[in-house]
Image 1 (cartoon, one colour):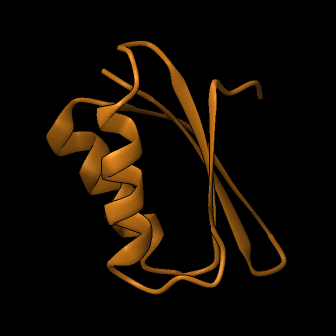
Image 2 (spheres, rainbow, N blue to C red):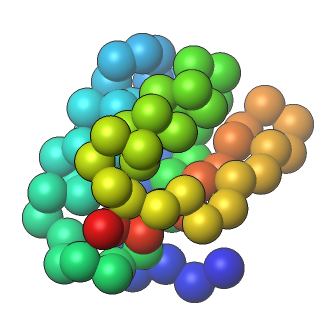
Length: 75
């Protein structure tokens, strides 16, 4: 899936991935997509709630080995 922005949060632990995502999304335009890669399992819950509370859209998520990928569209 194509993305306008990339965020590598591999190796970071909660709350760092969520804080980085939040900061990156602030600088994005509405409708742009960010692809986030992370290894902390808590990102699954954190990113879902972030999208729900901030009116962003979780377009897709997938897991390969220990790396999780998320595609989020800014609302």
